[in-house]
Length: 247
Length: 252
Image (cartoon, rainbow over all chains, first blue to last red; front, side):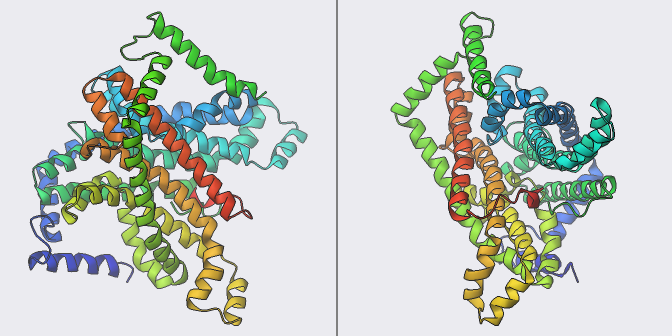
């Protein structure tokens, strides 16, 4: 029952496309797209491009998370750090990071470094902001109780602050990963000569529409797997928390 | 303590200026901030920044106008009727995570006008975000308020205008705030690939012909636009919804 709307849409598309009400040249029927996807996957090319994209995404994510979480925590815990970094955050957080791509291309040259760093910067600011928010909205009573029971320094951090901010950190990581994916795909679409984003662009330019839709569907499936997987992970790690949000 | 907030960027700019002037930083890649400011002013005076900036601002405005009304309608329907929600959920779950830049080819097949394709592509993510937050907003509405309203005879449009809309407005705003951020990413990216004007196009073209100073000027303009949009939306919120804080929690 739950799948009735998407299924009926697919059937409509199929019928419209087969009967040329919808131009099959631009909107090939779903069955053809599925067959093309299977063929491309069996041929192996698509796996290569998928791996390129996933690899970029993974490196970008690690490059963002490793400094992002500590930076957010430091900003939340030490006021001078927050005052020093906040002005940059205020200006750079709303900046669409894809706009940094030309600058990075000039400084680092046209290549992987610039592509990946664009993704990393996209994720970094989100992770910092979410982590900082987690520290700032932490119940101050938790800190007091912790201190009263003699927790100080590292112990206070490990036993009180970190568990209390973990939900926000995980949310930041999840949103950051999504932003990194957007940036990596956009970079591939705009300038890189490999990866799924580039594949969609190339097939578009060559008007290989069945192939284009196949690559598009693959990106959708990867996105779906990511969102589902991360939500499951978040629910697992934070078993004590209620539902965290819809995204 | 807040002097740090002023000193820290100032120090960076002065350090950059000195480093570029003395050749510590390669001025070809990192022109002096004063040089960038000069070029920025020149581009403002000769009208190119106002032109490109205006085009991008108009596109942002169109994405919001295109995305919000249908998103609020769908979000309300999903919040009110469980069947609608369960019917649309799988569709949203598959489409929402797709980076919306990739919709550009598909939409440009549907719409003959390149300009329309660009704006609709930008409107996709805001649509989903506003629909989701509106739905959450309806779900958290106090049932007694709804019942009281229907008891007093509020139905249809009146129920919508007097109860549902004010109750969910903070959530709609959260969706808009998040959506604007994503719309800007997509619009700039799409302008880079396939537009002749707009700040993204200016940025990309000046990189292409290695006019580094103009590239920096375009980057500064984009940063200012992003900051301005956040600030403006915050003001609008404070104006329209003085009684609530931002419901950031729903977006997390």
